[in-house]
Length: 389
Image 1 (tube, rainbow, N blue to C red):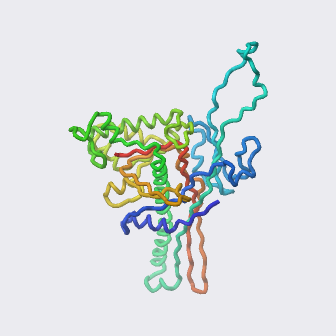
Image 2: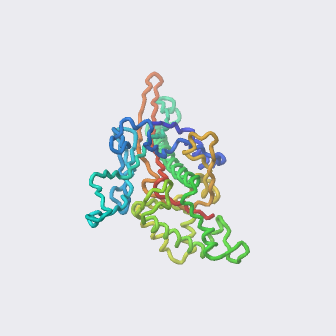
Image 3: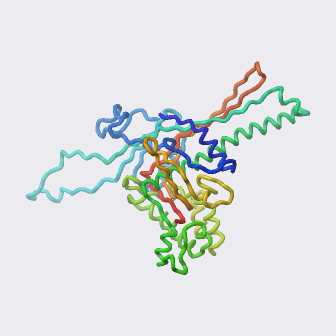
């Protein structure tokens, strides 16, 4: 298990989202668990004898087969009570073979009675945990002179405690954004699943840069009704495409299928608001909202005023760059949506804790709240990044 102290990242992200500091590149290398394959590594000593990949004594095991329906809802959204490592067992579809019962007696007949058929199984471990805490001291005596009654001082202390809880809630929300940003960066790094809607629109319409109807990339597309109709059509198509078995939308050529009930659909509000405002029908938005895992966000990495460029873009060093000699920054702008399998972006362990320490000699009490979170990005699962590029 690897534990990452991320309080400095939390503070930097918070200050940028509040407008207290300028946006900067975020180094996420090693912070998001991308999974470690069992291929002769340090964990194989306790593995099974048949496949040589199944590991003993794992805190939580996820059995991953080809998904056609929602069999195990929110499997990765539960806390791990014992153990610390999440093990994902991926069982791929089994290929068809010849039926020899119709060939008995033929000159080329040979029996496969003694053949052993091993399934195609990959095992991945997710073992990184991110942790931080927030604390505040409440003195017994020093506040008294500022208030005229006990109830007034209690109200003030209650506000402090609410701020403590609210601060942790806000930080948890920002780390969820960071987890999604890292997934976007990993997809960009691997050139997989990036859907550039404006480029597709111009190609479909036969527009060149000299054409009257040519649509430039970026924010202006949000005011183009014809483009919004086209983009809505394409997005709904991709939601349907991801339900079919295929290797197109993941890294590693795994055969995957993601049902609508098992698909995260995260859209930038600037885009959904444009669809609501400029399209005569709200069918597209209603269809998205009806999906179980639909959500809309104001921003991905930076929440800087009304600046679309910041809200729709990310600039991060992805987690997979952890051991790179020269870390490479991934930059992508105009992101308006993420379609991803439930198991592609997830939380493997969620623990919130609180404590209080009484220091009698100084007549004060320290109150602390903290979180231990295991964030997962699995780019071997289906995922699509939608952009206005």
